[in-house]
Image 1 (cartoon, rainbow, N blue to C red):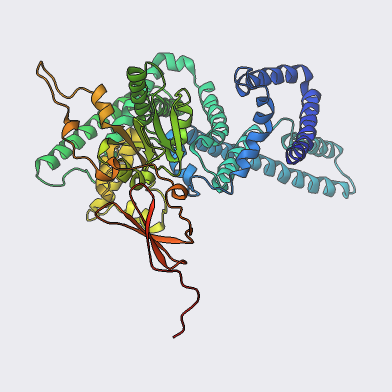
Image 2: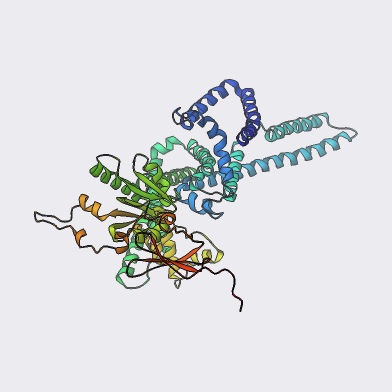
Length: 593
């Protein structure tokens, strides 16, 4: 019933919206709309049905995916701060659309105010002409030619005003600017903030950037460009790079003239060299721009900036997709499995193939590693899922045991010395030092005084993280180790391999000499070697019954003493589980005193 009701609610919301969409599209341009709708839904159906193997995906992709996301708002997965998209996701991966959209919005406001000034000027002129026409109307002997001129002028300006204020087409720039700002505010306020949702923030910014860059490129005088402008386009990116080399060291506390030490002198010489190169390049730009207009130079400078931003954006995307795709030094993925997950899977597969000639290796894993191992272990016929309660019984005879970090204290005493233990990182998250950003932290970060060396190191560390995902400088500044093996935001897992099983697989030595099995020298754990599968109701049952056993103890002969609280006596069992004695007698009532 609940599913039927949910389906009806979805249908009541979907059908009117679809009807409105189809009606508006057909009224606008039915031929163009039908072609566009067919192309869109063909691509959408191809992916959301998993190449037409999951037909219900047509419905789940349209309705339930949005419903699922709305339900997650209360969960607040990730618990990211409100500035997560504005200060982390967008600056790291979408700086080209952000900068381009910001320039487009500024250009749009300039265009708007220019049009506004024109409209105000026309209204002011209409007011003056109206006053003049009224004064001519009350004149006893008006000049007919002057009246006609004023009326004709008034009519023409009124037409211009009507045309400039009439909405004849969709306000493209206003719509996409509004959508970009609305998406940023909406997703920042949403409960669930994940990096891949940045796609929705980026799309309108990309369109705005394309609009702005298109206007710049379309206005370039290509004849001038072919004659001399191409030289400017080649020189300007070099100028921007050298200026970065000049300004950058000043921002991170590595400026010139800091001292006479070798490192300080090297910084001074590098800075002076960058300054000299920048001066030479700037002079070259000046010589190249003498025969062209400033507008042409401004257009080519904008194109140069966008070329550099495009290269940097491509580099960032390449690093995230093909270099650091498996590591937590990227912010594009939130929680994801470490490379060790696949490495352990490959090791278990190899052990199974070498010992069982198939996928019949008996091993155990708990609920902490069930994601993603429940899927990865689907082909193993003897994989044992122990859930939240690994015991000696369900771990018995397992060649390999894989458990999460939270089960280490439970499993370690059970397996003892019989297993070789390996520790891996199972899952990790990006660094989260940007949490709890306060005004004091920002003030300290932008403190450029020479006495605050930590702030300069923090700025350099943030730049290293942004540019090359290098956390070493930032880690030194805050006193944390961000190396791969000691990543601070991670969850470990433990892999146990039975030693007698490992001795059959792994070689303990090299060369031609005989190698003794070190397992023969391992001291046996008495508890593990003498363990018996005894069950309470079978081993401790006696004619009188036991009401509440609260404590046990063993003597030197292996006899088990069990204290029964409510019966007020102690029952003695031998090593076979048989009752051999009872100490004390039941008490019939309370003793006063």
